[in-house]
Amino acid sequence: MSFQATMEAWPRERVEALYAGITPADVEGALSREERSIHDLAALLSPVARPYLEAMAREAQRLTRWHFGRTISLYAPIYISNLCAADCLYCSFASHSGSRDKRTTLGPDEIREECRALAALGYQHVLLLTGEAPRIVPVDYIAGAVAIAREYFSSVSVEVYAMDTAGYAELHRRGLEGVTLYMETYDRDMYRRVHLGGEKMDYGFRLDAIERAGEAGVRRLGLGVLLGLYQWRIEALWLALHARHLQKVCWQSALSVSFPRLRHTPARFRVEHPVSDPEMVQLMLALRLFLPESGFNLSTRESAAFRDRLIPLGITAMSAGSSTRPGGYAIHREECCEGMAETAVLEQFEVEDTRSPGEVVSAIRRAGYDPVWKDFDAAFAPMQLG
Image 1 (tube, rainbow, N blue to C red):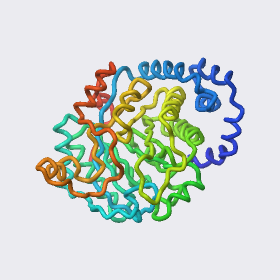
Image 2: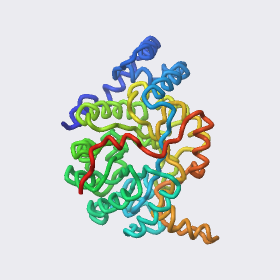
Image 3: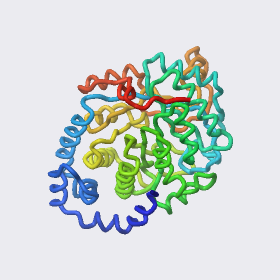
Image 4: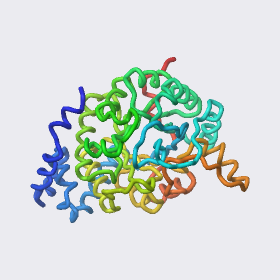
């Protein structure tokens, strides 16, 4: 059941009208309820809710601890390819980004080397990433990478190009547990403006891709928008509607939300709708109150100090010690450690939180939370054959 019908029922004008009518009484009513409607979410996201952020934070903390305890799961991204046939204005991987850094796709032995390096640090959750190049980096290649990673980790997810149901089913057959797919922006006009080439230009195909992953049996589904591309309050409402839709049609899958904020972008792109730290906090708090059972992921795009402050406000998973270039953990890291300049392999974005995994673990413990390396509920998932 496509989400496109819901998007058509909630055009930008309807969302703007909803925000325009919000009053302090609406915010107070939203805070007093256990189950919150889309109108309640709009109240919590609105400028009217700014004086209520402390009350929202207390409720977000209570809900997160009720559903997730005092645990923060740790994961790491593994970029297996930075080849890209799409032309997304905001991305350094884009085919016309202007970067002269090296493009590469890791071979099976190199993928194993990266997996061994991360497994030695204690990781049990990894996220495999590629650019948007389905013809150069096909499904079979990604499926092989998933199978290799499953030899080292109990949980393997991917953040790659949108696939059809058969593609996701093949990855699932090889051991895939999760799919993360950012819509980037739900606004059709903005989507058209920033995606100038490649198969990613197909808005409808990407919009329904995460639902196809659920239909294929993928157990974990991750959503997000690129904060800064479009007006964050409008995007947040569409994102929440999408999440509720997936909770209904993909009820056997667990849902998580990520909060990627555009910071370092190619010279040809200017962030038109920057999201401030207080706005980011309000966004996360409001979505936690609306989606109390969903995981919240926070990457190393954000600074160490800001990430530490967000730990008690709804975060359930954090990446640590991340590299955003292929071969960044073992192959090129070794050269750097030997005193050589790090090989100029193209990275997707600059990491803001450069702390080691051990340092992030210490920060989590200082905040009164327990870092978790292993997903114990995977033991209750259906056994994967193949």
